[in-house]
Every structure is written in structure tokens, then in C-alpha cells.
Amino acid sequence: MATTTTTRVFNNGNSQAVRIPREYRLDTSTVLIFRNDNGDLVLHPIPDEPEQREARLLDILNRFDAEDIVAFEEAHRDQGGIQERETL
Image 1 (tube, rainbow, N blue to C red):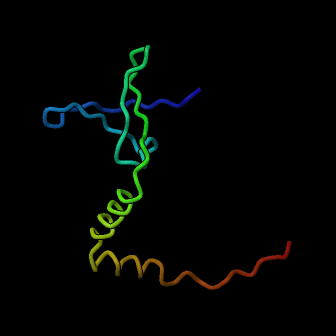
Image 2: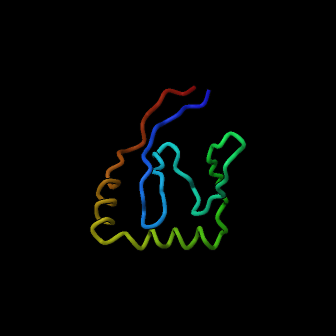
């Protein structure tokens, strides 16, 4: 049986919106929406075109500032040495 989650419906300007929980996030910026014979709303992800993916990636990267980069470098600077492991 599929897992279910209850979430919130709210107004966003003149539109109605649904909060999508993290475990159901979509990896696209466009969806096909329709109502099936049971009356359920169905969201079907439409894959982004490569140009759209590139633009979204650049948008995300442009949100990083110098402080973010320093914090990232500090967090990943000391990864430790190679671990000695028993041979299989």
C-alpha cells in the first residue's frame, strides 16, 4: 500500500496552492495536472528541457555568496586520511 501524508491547502494570490512535503518533492518546474475518474487530483511531472535545467542550476549557484563558499570549504577541508581496511 502506498504511503500517505496530510498536508495544507492555502491561497496564493488568486490561486489555490498545496504544500508538497519533502518526501514528495518534484525534480521539475512543470507538471501536468488532471482529475481522474475518482475525482482525485493527479500531478504528473514533465521533465525540464536541458536549457531549463541549466538556467535553474545557474540560478541556484548565483544564490551562493562568499560566506557560503567559505563555510563549505571549512566543512570539507579536513576529510581525514585514507582508512586502513581489511582485505576482502
